Length: 327
Ligand SMILES: NC(=O)c1ccc[n+]([C@@H]2O[C@H](COP(=O)([O-])OP(=O)(O)OC[C@H]3O[C@@H](n4cnc5c(N)ncnc54)[C@H](OP(=O)(O)O)[C@@H]3O)[C@@H](O)[C@H]2O)c1
Image 1 (cartoon, rainbow, N blue to C red):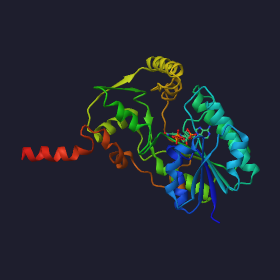
Image 2 (tube, rainbow, N blue to C red):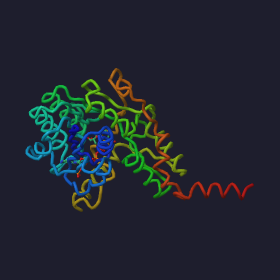
Image 3 (cartoon, helix red, strand yellow):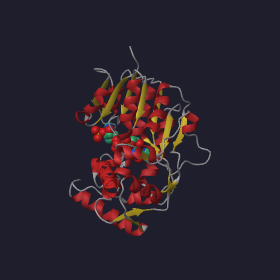
Image 4 (tube, protein in one colour):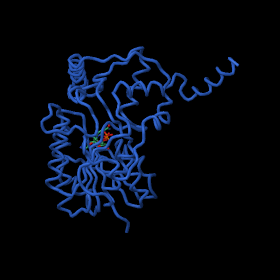
């Protein structure tokens, strides 16, 4: 019988890349999420029955326990940007993280990989960063051999970073950024998945790893690079933190009173996080310790951002036709 991994949040942006890698490695994969009917796309990652979406809510002990039955390895890819509500920072990133680690230890699971984030800090004034630090602490207390991954901003086909700003750049001549001068170190989603694969398969040492890409540049510089890829010129405006926080407060309110029909473009908590650089700390273990070569954004962005070019998929044809006319 091949080995079994349970991936909590395995249908999300990061989780699906881990699910695909584990299936390729020959493992059976259980993708544990609240909406398994929306996760059916993971099934073709393996042969018939090899990758199965199953219902689970990590806010409930028995739900977490039932989908962990027989698992050799466990991964937690569940995260949230919601400060309030049922699926809040504390419910998911502290209590949920602790629950998975505790039950994994109880059930004698071999390896546990937990996804945190760069900037995890118990003293932070950001609820996200604080809950990530408390989550890490709870995971290590219950399962000391866990591998903890702390990625910087993650990019790739389904990201909420370059895709979001590329979509916004179609709306007008100005693109507003918050914390434009802060440094970022975006990491490719499949590099994060490769690190997780090594942890799950037991071929990497446990511990905390900070995962960043090969380039450290300002947020503004990455957005300029993205604009070059989508062939659009925009005026970049750095919004003051105070104003961004007011916009965050108003949009959170709008999201609440519309029952989620309106999605807040930014939350107050994100504004707090954008006051800090998001880069790998000096001396932290990282991708190189795992033997992984990081992929740069410029190598991947054109593969998925072409649809934001003025001519979309026809952009290259239009360009070559324009060259013909000038010859
Ligand atoms: N994306 C980034 O740039 C980034 C950067 C640093 C760190 N991280 C961390 O990396 C991890 C993965 O992020 P992501 O971007 O892949 O997140 P994501 O795309 O939002 O995916 C979240 C996954 O968790 C599931 N989920 C949410 N609440 C759940 C619950 N209560 N019980 C069970 N499943 C639940 C979701 O499926 P259902 O909705 O069907 O339940 C989905 O599969 C998170 O811990 C995040 O904080 C992400």
